[in-house]
Length: 283
Image 1: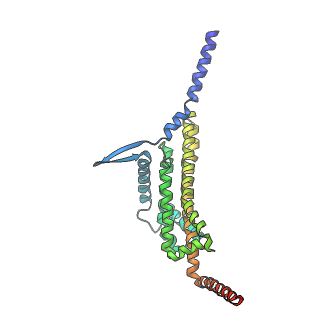
Image 2: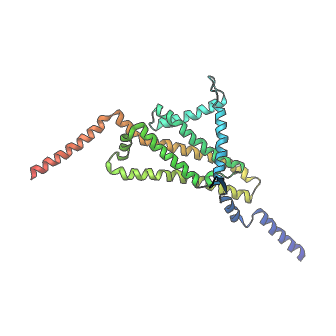
Image 3: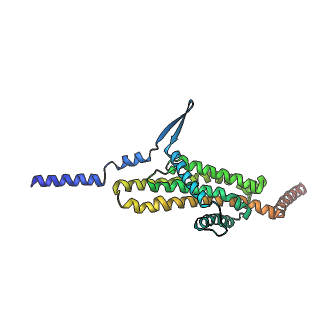
């Protein structure tokens, strides 16, 4: 009887260890750590992380996929062409909602589409068991910096330096420090949103693969690996369009109604001259 009780207790202990291993933290930590590869170019040693390699593979696959879908457009579009045109139309309609003109929306559509395709490719590749590049904080930082630099560049191109400057001091000049802080915070917001969601989903999926490797990962992977990855790409692209629209709004108003801005300057000058006259009379 003692032998059976000892055997049964030992069997349950080993079964529990097999189903829920005690070293879950160590295994997740191993999955989180980036893999480094070293490439010698002459006398220089170049570091290639797993994020860089996976990023180029994912982007290459999606680039070929979209090139095939958009190849040789037809007068009567098929399913592939309809899907691509639907995505372009979605970008144009969102841009129009933020006050971006049609010609400007068509100009930014390729770049916004590039952000969307790149983030979607790098996020959804995890459904095949490949580590997503956004797990490495360097990828979200690079994407966020590229987006903000593009926002500033394209805003100046659309409304000029004067129009962009007016967007920083509107409606009052003392708003300038706050607008500058806002510009500096935007890449941080884009970066942390992308990194936090992808990194959290990656850790959760690794936990499911360790605890229950058969059923749950496949079910939850449809959301965390696929749907959430596409959603983060949509949010990133949407916010980029929003930042552009916000930056050029005042510039457009200045181009369409320059008299409003001239009146404001004249009113300020009149107030200053009136104040000076009153001070002179008092003396």
